[in-house]
Image (cartoon, rainbow, N blue to C red):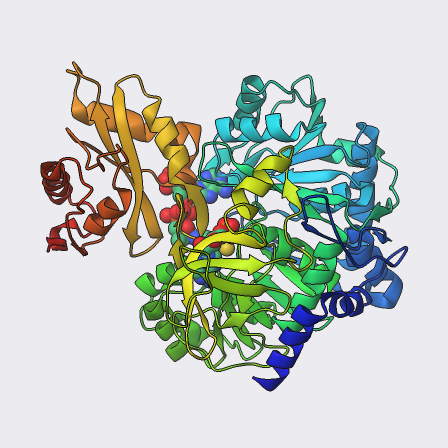
Length: 636
Ligand code: COA
Ligand code: AMP
């Protein structure tokens, strides 16, 4: 660990010198003189006085350096049967023209643009076009329902919404315009304009505020890159918190560009000209960082994939993509490989493809469970790397740094803290935990470049959600421990956030939706273990006194309500009507206990419980309704 340790120590002991050096690795219009400063609340701000434009650094700069003819994007869409390659030169021109089109709609530096698009190259064009103008984009994942989109529109107050006419799932076309129309109807803030990319799978009719992407583009003049400060916001990305109101994570420009560039070298070990494939979605942070920005900043080609790991058309599709595009570094979520393993347990599809180009496989979005790790490790000849991060950090907090010093892997561990992240595990009293002792995983200030700089429109929430629990530390919301060799094991959230198929959702938000139903007196939504998706939500509901309706109909109505309000991506498919819920004497629902029962664990009756019989009732109901592994749970 010598090389890693030396680099890590330098990043912690001399953060300014370390990140000043890294800043030189990307092109600035005006290099920063002030590397690190702190705001009035003591939060780190990087490269405040530097000037750059990330679109220039990722596109124009490479064209100027002679990469204009190198592919920037390989788009592969088995769900539509189409493929397309865009070079750096073509992408830069397309982005400049679309930026001109947005400018024509009144978008200027600092304005917000909401992007609601599937995995098409135009999604990247729209994001870069915003960046080119210094406008702030906010991409909303297509699986979210109109209500969620409306919440984001009201929070971000965009001038323009950019969308496609539809998304395409395995077996169906999903019209996007009705969602956008419904969201704008629901929102108080009304954008001035909507731009739609017409797709062959679903043509739409334009309304009053709507514009056709292609028509707009054909009339637009290319726009130049607008210089922005290192600390100016690049995007707002909403993520689930513990309440119904998602947090708008604000990302700066300079720190993010420097951190992503560093990660491409140190963690992913890719060089200009290499091909990088991240099988995520532009609606998630992984998509922002490792489909859109990092690969192009590094002069790599990014694979943009519109499809699933299985059924589009088969469980060999990832191997086909790796082989066809000569992918060097591949990144996806463990759940994707659990889906593949289910269909192809012996890895037969892999034999059909030459994947000798692949040098490492990276997994994140949820913990890489040891069975999936071992399956992949046996199947592949390259390192299988779990790495841990979150929307807030924007890049990995812990990893096995392939470009710095590859370390032996340990199943279940994300390996070691990445340089810049002073990760600690604290016990309940805020003391540093001993090795092997579980606690709250925190990051000591200053956070390195690239991490969130605030919660959009709510500076107080940034402080209360992340900084207040342990002064001087950022609270990750994850629990875990270090082993004796300094390997970090991240074991799961300590709050109401759950991870469904690598997607982060809030059980607190689901409870708010379910609890708002007129027939519901009380409810709890818990995340339970699922063999494919990692976790899925289950609702437990007490109807109001006097409820004499059909319980099955109520359960169905609640499932439909969550799908309608949050979206299909919440995978809320199981609700149980119960007569009481186990609570402490102070009235707190014992959610952890309920989770343990559903996961088939042994459980004791806590001394603080108000009504011990309520526990048995719920356990019986779970067994009867076949919830998770409740039949295996034993009271001890
Ligand atoms: N637009 C509209 N609906 C969407 C959508 C989108 N962009 N993405 C997903 N949905 C819908 C799906 O159609 C599904 O609807 P259904 O309940 O009617 O079937 C629902 O949301 C749940 O989707 P998903 O979680 O994708 O489940 P699935 O059963 O279709 O697929 C996996 C399961 C494991 C193949 C899939 O979840 C997957 O590929 N996961 C990897 C996730 C990933 O890469 N995450 C990256 C984060 S790092
Ligand atoms: P998101 O913000 O959607 O990226 O989700 C972040 C959360 O996903 C983290 O707080 C963790 O709970 C979980 N997560 C992501 N990657 C990992 C990993 N490699 N190991 C354990 N948990 C992970």
